Length: 471
Image 1 (cartoon, rainbow, N blue to C red):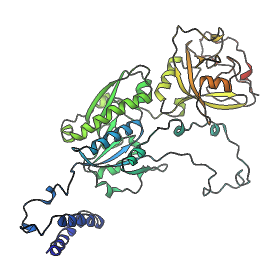
Image 2: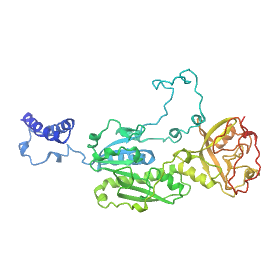
Image 3: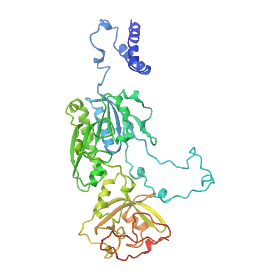
Image 4: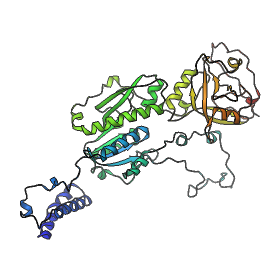
């Protein structure tokens, strides 16, 4: 009897699924129905199976959870907090989700150009002749974003610890991003996509195959600050209020309908690292509440006002550079806050004949009533380093007559050093070293500081001290 029933199920259902999906999908559905037919004990069932009025899907032993099947895209502190909260919701008894699969960026590493198996050397090159290629200034002083902003944990680590399946995004130059071993047919297995990362790194064509589309966690009060860098731009523009928005997502523009929105007051002296942690904590809870009431929030979703929309740029290396000729102390400190935890701001530090990129990883504005380290403080140009052997900071004058205190520095290629360690290791003469905006030519003295037109010190003669000499 059981063999006849199961065979009937296969003959009746497989052709139907073949018309909807491919042969592989039909086979998977057939196996699922086969298992359901045998999980109901036929020997104790007095009523024939074909006349059973109770649907098999109502059997609680067969379907434990009918929640959403989520495909999660995450990156950074906000992505980490959202994934943690979703895992917590998944483990609860009344979860709105039945499964989560994670998509994230792969672990970044800088491949060596000397690796075997790479492209063959060019004819006549130094590599072909067996000579060591001379490194340029930019290769010696390159800012490695991965090493200098590495998170203690990552999205993939949290997903692996929770036994979730992890996929990685790959993107070749000039091509759209793709997910490894994932195609349009796999998207049909999910009910919704949750995005907590830059939309330009998400393969948007896959969202068309997901039943309910996608929703995104955006770190601003939309329509203000659309784009990839809303938190950095808010700090640079001295905003006092920002927030988190949950929006519908169909393309790379953040112009979808707003499902939920919560404001957040930015405390004074907040850095990007602090703000991303706070908005991640706030946005993760808002995300779970939205998923729990998805149908209700979509009915009440509001369209964005396109006339009030503003956009954020993609910041480059020049945006992280300190320009001592034009930037005052407050502007430099604001730039430090906006990129601290993202990419450190940097300047050029010349030690003898070597140009080094110096990362400023700790800085603050001192109390104006605090006495100066030396009487010669305002007679030296902006960017000059003043120190005391037992002090916890290095004092630096700026173009606006104000000053900064540096507490943590790193020469690219070396480790972080506190101010006192940096002084003991590198500095000899108090006020004898000046940080530069751009590198200068080798074997030549450091040029004089160029004040902007109309500055009171425009025509003041500058003294060239020992540490500034380039030989």
